[in-house]
Image (cartoon, rainbow, N blue to C red; front, side, top):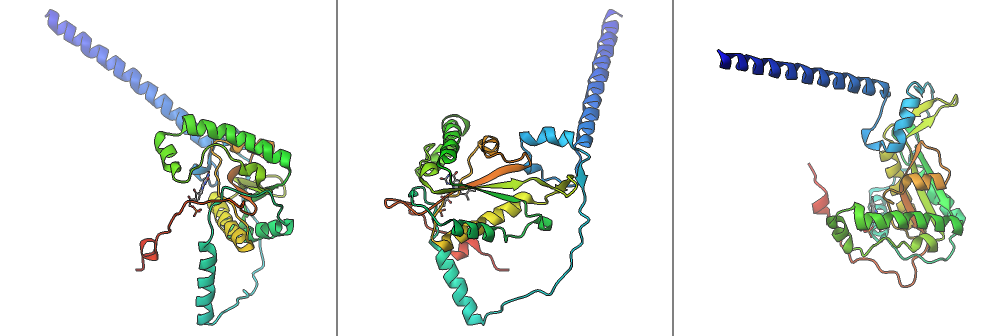
Length: 289
Ligand SMILES: Cc1cc2nc3c(=O)[nH]c(=O)nc-3n(C[C@H](O)[C@H](O)[C@H](O)COP(=O)(O)O)c2cc1C
């Protein structure tokens, strides 16, 4: 009789615990749904969020505006080349770009600003999601500003190398002989910092969706690299890790802009070296179906 009572008490206790646990879970679920609801936006690429987005998203949940612009359509103008010329042009373009290398030793010789303006204009010919052109190219020439940029990057990169990133990352980078010292940030006559605009603004100040902004800006950066190569300048593609927010504030860029790449631009220094990398042959990168 005694043991039957204790079994009954145990069963009742288990039931009470189960009921309370379930109640907790459904409260958490309701909270999660409410959070998701308040952050709902017409379109968002989850990969593009960073901590500086979150507060703004909550503040401006109702501020989005659908595009109502209408645009006239015009006849497309096209230049067609004879096949032989197509082959020559494509071969020559390949040979030009195959000479592009990431150069980390850049001389302090000045470059013509007209060339910089032309390469940025060329980058701006890139396609972009719904023609939103979600890019800002910040061209830094001022030596003091370049030095401030260097200080921020070296401070963060030192932590990246020594603490944030694992041994594998440090080992993988050994072959390109980089570390947190970035002398080219002072010596290169021009730094181009490319920001992606995670959203834009309409004429009436409402937020405008920038579809696939990171892909669009990355394509623009590829075209910029090709344009620099074509102009006879060198650069190294850099992604200063954990520096974006500080550099954005330093350069007085608005919160809808996030740093994507930093390109130091100039002529190679006389003693510049590069790792002796080989590129994959066509049969390893192209599949024809
Ligand atoms: C997305 C991306 C990020 C990169 N980040 C850095 C970087 O932070 N620092 C650096 O020295 N090189 C960086 N590089 C350059 C690569 O190391 C370089 O492209 C690669 O070693 C191949 O060499 P190549 O550019 O001379 O062909 C980056 C390249 C890419 C595409």
